[in-house]
Image 1 (tube, rainbow, N blue to C red):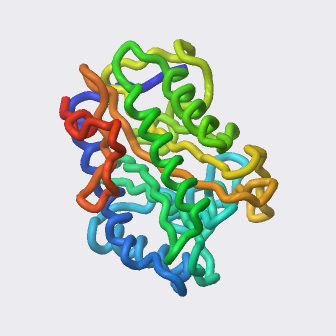
Image 2 (cartoon, rainbow, N blue to C red):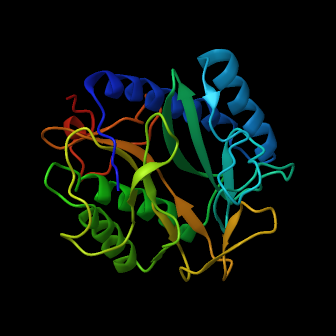
Length: 274
C-alpha cells in the first residue's frame, strides 16, 4: 500500500478544495424543502461549482472500472438509499431524509464532504439516526492523531453506532484523497483498536460512516450505482475530509454554514492549522 503524504503546499490546496465543497452544501441548505427534486438540487450544485466557484464536479462522468459513468454533479441518497443515489425528478416529501455528497476539484485537488438533510419535519427515528451518524463520524475524527491507527477510527465509530441500536455498513469505507479522488488508505468504519495502518502527519483521508436504522446488509440497484438497505430501513451518512497534523487532526471540510460540533469535540482541535 502506497499512502501519499501531502506537503505544506499540497495541504493548502486541499484546504481550499475542502472549504469550497462544504460551501456548496451551505448554498444548497435552504433549497432542501418539500417539493424540490434531487435533479433540481443537482443543477443548483453544478451551476454553483462551475459558474461561481470555478470548480469541477468530480462525480460528473466519473467511471471507475466496472461502473457506468456517473451522470450527475452530486450524489443524493434518499431514505433507504445508503450512498451513490442518482438525482432524479421525484419531489422530496415532508419527512424524507437525504444525504447530499459533494466532491469538487480545484486546481487539481479534490474536496469531498457530505451532509444529511431532514426534509420538513422528520420522524423521531429519522432525527435520531441522522444525529447518531453525525456523532459517530466525529467519534472517529477525534481519534485521528500521529501514532494512532486506522482501526482506532473504525472501532470508535462501530461501538458508538451499535451501542445506539444501529448497524454499520461494511462494504463502503472512507479513502485517501488528494490529486486523485480515491487514494490509499481505505478507512473502515468498523474494526479493532490498535490495528491497520499507523497515522502520520500529512495523511489526508475521508471519514464517512454509513449507518442503518435496521440491519447492515445492502444491495445495488440496476442503475449500477445506487446502494440501498436490503430491509428498506433508513440509512444516514456524514462525511468529512481530515488531515493528520503534527499534534492531532484538522478537518478540511468545515464552512460557515456547518452544523454545530458535538459537545465532545474541541472546536480549536477541529480547526487546528499545521
